[in-house]
Length: 561
Image 1 (spheres, rainbow, N blue to C red):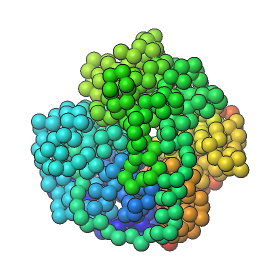
Image 2 (image 1 turned 120 degrees about the vertical axis):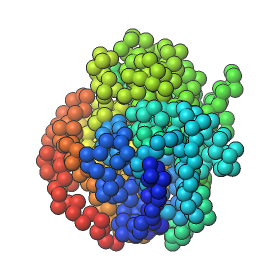
Image 3 (image 1 turned 90 degrees about the horizontal axis):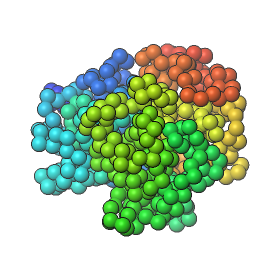
């Protein structure tokens, strides 16, 4: 089985000290990316750690495929203890940083401790330097990019940045790279901000060779370049009209499931506003969305579908320019668009202000700086819904994405079992229920009975994809045989590795008191959920209370090839 290469670089930003450690065994067993980050976090973060305390750690990691030029590999992973969900969480970002990171020669880079002054951390293959950057306090992402470029001659592809939101410990603060790409969900930007780190740069010339099957990687790259996919025109927003037709679009703070104004902000609006192609590092698929409003020349990248839902249908806003601006503000201030948009929609519901575009944009800024009511909203819906007098539309502390589980019941089941809560990317079950796959792979959207086996396979497969690290859009080009060729091992073995990654996440959560009760806390009823959860646990070999037997994680690093 191919895997990432290089040692772990551990950076204590409080002591301003670094050390390297051989992690060949972890890399050989868990590939890279999310797998390696999860294993290291499980071993090194105390089970009772405060997510915003110095004992929490952030692990950045790429995988073996970032040494290639194959499409869908311009991504990397970050893992830590989430201040939003209070659980172990991995987030991956696209863009262009994965290659500069790989050029440092490290298999993973870990940030721990907390600095007594605001710092930038420069990671190179020949060492680490710390730079006090007090003048950048509450600087935006754009301002920080300009500083790093002018002072260090490093472009935005080299840099992971927290905006004002991360510094102010907004619980859904994001880490931004390549200007508009985010380690978005779960608040890992707040973790980096709590360590008083404004940015981390990566640079070097020490990329380690990984022997890949060039025939299959080149075939995937060629197909990505020549395929005719609607995702190339409108990105993830391509699903908008279809989701609306089947009543799977959260609307009016989850009160409704379709939106009459969606045509103004959905895929046709994206196509009308897209003015050039956009992509990630080495990717010929080019699905990104540089958009421009011709009325005033305003440009941004995006919005993607989840952002359209959160700031559009859920807020009853049907002006695409407003959604564009909210998306851009979140990128520049450093926030997850889904959690921010849903939280703003909760506030609009509480004040009977649906559709108030001016207030929506004001709230985005106030949240980032924790000003006035923004200080409350920066805590996220789970912690403030009672004070707002609205329903708690979160799962395990995380705000919901689109692809509503009340319609797509298997997706609802996956929200329940997901260790990240209401994250649509944990298993991507909705692909099979719309369906967006071939008819022979599709499954009915109604009911949860008997769907656990598919959910488990998709969770395990997604864990491998996040460890590779591969984009979700690669799924159409990587069937089982290609997975075996890309990773150079049997598919069943890959599923075993994926299962172990999911188990480590779950075991960490169990040690923090999380169990079946958390899986049953969906804000809506799903007939048969309790019975299917028992089936899910049984298939995974877990206890019926949703906990992992201790013996299941004993020797979890000893996954043979």
